[in-house]
Length: 395
Ligand SMILES: [Zn+2]
Image (cartoon, rainbow, N blue to C red):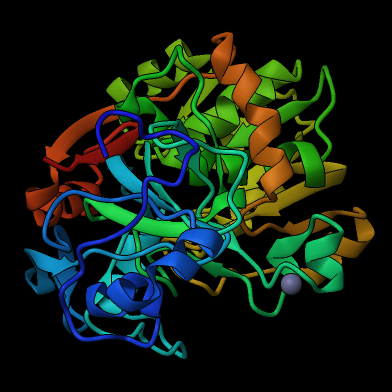
């Protein structure tokens, strides 16, 4: 096919395996049907033997269930792209998915973890016209059915069929992944792959929390819990971008200093100090307008008590446990709002990209690991030694 990997149909194939019924992907079927396939498919010839390296889990458990091994390379269906993954960042969701979540059906095994990625378009499924082979893109990890009232109104995270790569769907701890063409956005040229692969889930989440739900305004004070986490590093930057005063919590002096370098106006070392008392002191007993909560059980009571009357607590996670103690009287008498947040929309990710392009937002990468060392990367996260995102780099 030469070097012309752009819009023309360079055609297909090389998959010598058993026919899966998707004839356009099967070499033997193709020989018979290639004219028809050429007409309706815009699948580009891929090099290789149809296998890729991936980190797969064959059962739930600790990091010992993660195996770096050969896996079938996925193939894009109509409306999808095949992404060559150049970087894939870790999220806490990976660890929950690996260990198993109570009350949730485990993913189909073998499963590939990984929500986030940046990479290059390697192949286009039928009907994908707005992208080209080789385009550099950032992944939006979640998508719904595409045709219900929620999907059509841009709130696909409410869709009954909303699913996330690496959680319900095969993920990005791999050399290749397929996903709907609408779930990739152009990667700003100012970013490298390491940074670009670390922004999808957490910046989208933090944007939806602060901008869409909490509607943060200039001059408000925002308490960001867990400054070193992915959501924390995003929330500090977004709150500052909207003119808020930011109090961030982190564990230890070094992480507090890093939070200040990221833009936090004040910090609370939650290993040494009580969050609620420090918030009271720093705000002259007024409390904050907005709390960005994702820590869960351990910090929940302090998060609620840190709000001033009319304040908004927005939560997207419960890393330390799901059962936070709540004084209901406190909520109604002080007219607090508790807002639940889950990911964000495709449109919101697009809104974020120009802010990365001009440097007003920036990824924070703690360190990188080769894809083959995904287990060590997850152990690094579980030990809570990181500040910012941990990123896997496929070979
Ligand atoms: Zn839907």
